[in-house]
Image (cartoon, rainbow, N blue to C red; front, side):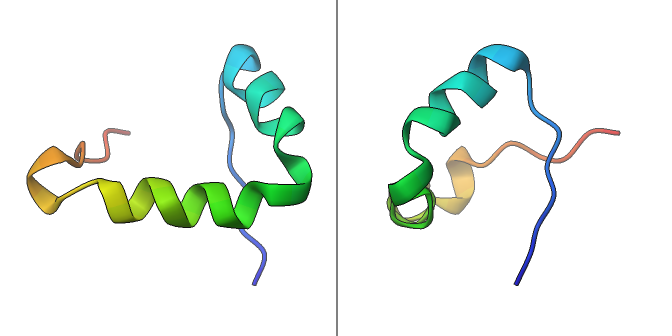
Length: 43
């Protein structure tokens, strides 16, 4: 699956550093966030 995100430059730089482990990092972050901690999407 391909997901395209637009992120601030500073976050993009951090994500580039994790490029080879990005799926693992995202999975861990999602596991740590409980539904009460998630931020509602704002357009």
